[in-house]
Length: 66
Image 1 (tube, rainbow, N blue to C red):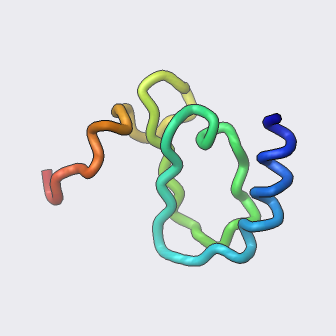
Image 2 (image 1 turned 180 degrees about the vertical axis):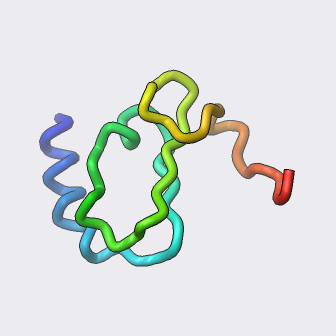
């Protein structure tokens, strides 16, 4: 299942654009998106050690300038 998702993501990543990408949860943190044009990628999870931000997805949205 992981390989199937990664293959699809590899197909779509070059088509994505924007300034920031928020990857929520352990699975999305483990999927590579190095072919993506979005340079600022943030991983949010409370368990996975790959995270950049330790939080629960239910905590979103974060307050601005908090």
